[in-house]
Length: 396
Image (tube, rainbow, N blue to C red; front, side, top):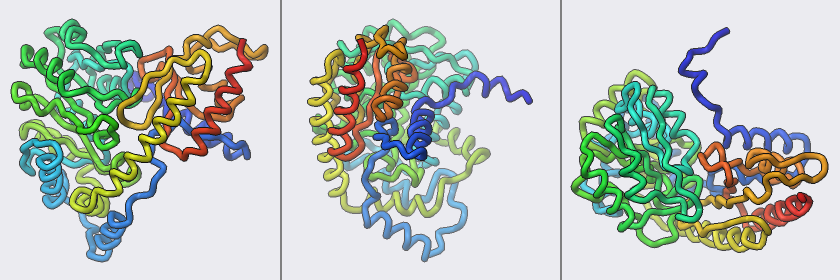
């Protein structure tokens, strides 16, 4: 019963594992507050659901083109022009089963065995695993809380070698909520301009959950524009995680390569979900702003409460819905029964003693931190932070 070598190289998803453990405790009747999963707690806006119902009634039940319906791709083209000032054609868009598949498609289409993929750390858990899946070599650049979890141009330049093929940049970031400013992106783009063999995946799935004002894309810089693949989708901005629609926007030759891969692999994404996504992009954007404001209020709430917890080092995230406190001051402490060796131990302790699910930072390339998602109600945030504070007070 031997699985493939490719599969044995992969690590299981730590975020999904913690979510599973919290569900198991809930099934036992334990009141667990789940801060482990990156999912808006809002429902999909009504006009988007109506579009899906209409699509069912109109028999959108056949295979779609592999890259998605032209109407959806044109809606994405209009979104990129109107919101981001970026010019694309429908032939430069390919839709997939969520932004996760869009990232993986692009990596699989570009990376050869031995190619290096630069991944700033902290990173989303799946980036290094996807690089390994493509027989690439993940190269991480650590960026700690003291630099707001953002890499510098000098760090990027130092990491580039003749084997470098790809940089994966996530802004706003999962797991840290950090957001790169236009000036910071310009600095990275100036470095990348010197290395024409290096491509960029710009993961912008949290674009609309931004507390800095305007979202900035690294695709705006003409000197590297033809080497940037934007990844985005409807999951986070429109509370549509389960609908599974993501897309890439990039050079046509890369989009064609991704279409070729997807054509042999999953074909086009769900037909009904595509019609819902089209309505998301073409319809009212009022719910997006309402959700953003709610997330900003929750951000302020959780940051304030976390700063009151002794031993937590906290930055102020400028986007997404995560807090990533540094908690290494608790390593080596004990409650008499168990000793906290690392962030995974701390996350398990908080789950079992405090009944709050978080995720240890090692899975994100930052073993001194834990990730908390504040995509939950104000009441849950207040109660979760009370429980965490109480549980940590037992450690000496």
